[in-house]
Length: 226
Image (cartoon, rainbow, N blue to C red):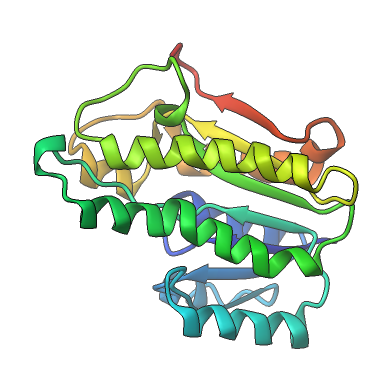
């Protein structure tokens, strides 16, 4: 059974991932600014505490937890994300920074802190978006979000190269539209072809086995063409 860290577990894909891994017998550290939904599960295999990727005190709290309760981490799923839908002309530098703090800088910081706990067979799975894939269909209003997801794809490739001789493996999944609360907030009324639970099942299977076949790869997880 694996020791698994998942970010962005208050709702949507992250919440479903935490439950799926825990139900499968794995030990899960579920991290989100709002940990109430996960705590309500009262699952014996889930530990959680309020966690903000951009808060240095929360990152120190994570270090302490890992040293004491999870000295070995098998899987890190960087699922937390911030989506901003706003015309480019109205998007400030502060808006860009807020999105990048979660989608890029936060991922880099938590990964850096977890890496010493991971061995050569560990697996870091970053959750990106089809919007960050070069040549894919783009949507207006997502300049900050999609560009940050493109940066995350490149960061994943670079880390895989840097750690290829020692491990762990790094891969990134570029998701198409998934019916989540975040999608509904950004695009009210839009109906995605995939549910959060369906996508979570796919991600869990990939996190457990994908590193046997892939390292430094970006996989497009979308039922539609770019």
